[in-house]
Figure 1 (cartoon, rainbow, N blue to C red):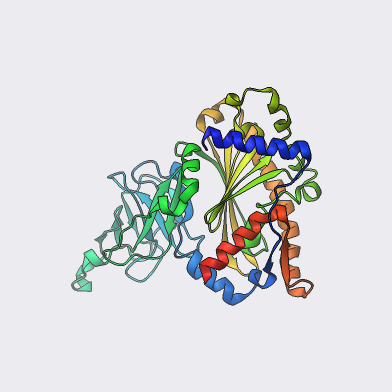
Figure 2: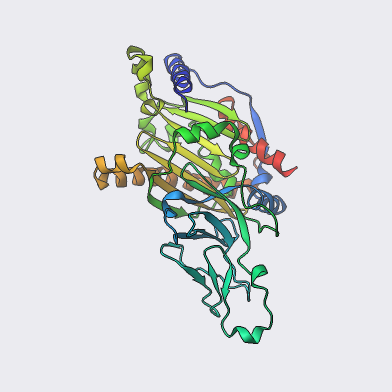
Length: 382
């Protein structure tokens, strides 16, 4: 984020904190059926998790030739690898013989080829079919058309994005990330995590619709009550500044130190000293940048009433070396404790949707990021 933008955010939140004001917007609503309707759920999977770029790995996992990540969180079996030529490629992790999963390990390194554990068909790092066990008994197999099915893939700001639909012959494997990220691309570049390390990734399976999981990140209104014993003391109560950034959103969550900046020169102001800076990347990722690490939260659909969320903590290795491992473990534990509080209540919300008590979820004026998010999903599904 440019320094002028950081100063503007700090001034805005400082004024809100002094006046005990809230970021104004419009009241909006979304139907509760959107959180449990089976047809809606299938449409979301077919579009949002097949046609849009989603985060499936991090650059830190794929630095060297032969590194790989296997991921099926979208419902599609995905294999991402770094080739001998240094190029990142993604494929459906499915053997072209009889559809077995080729790579069973979730990640690894030093691969020269991927060998199907069922019958031993093998593929090089470009996805080309290079070996057929007892190949003479298969007649003429066109190896050029029997490689692993490619997927579009891109690496940006320490994250690896994949569009989880197989490409047809002649289709480009590139993703126009400038167009996808739009006005948040410069911000993410300024917070670049390309050289950062993955400290931890924790998968959680809350009994909540995948969108309800994202909802929990988009407002601080609940912190005073739900997180009073965990993360609420770290922030000023419900002082959050939001901006809609095309299909994405950007917002900052205010720390008490914001009240002290008026005595400091503006050229020394740094937003992450006084706030956590968050981005809701459409359709399913939230980034939370702090002073020394970033939380990456990706929510995937399992069923209308269940999600998978991966909670990853990425750390600048320079910052990591300055502090003991106990510091990073404490941060991780605090994040997971707050999410446990969120998801315990969230499970009751999901169960109550079918009770008939409410036809809509109501988002207040300072909960406007939720309204934006659900509007973007509705627009995409039209």
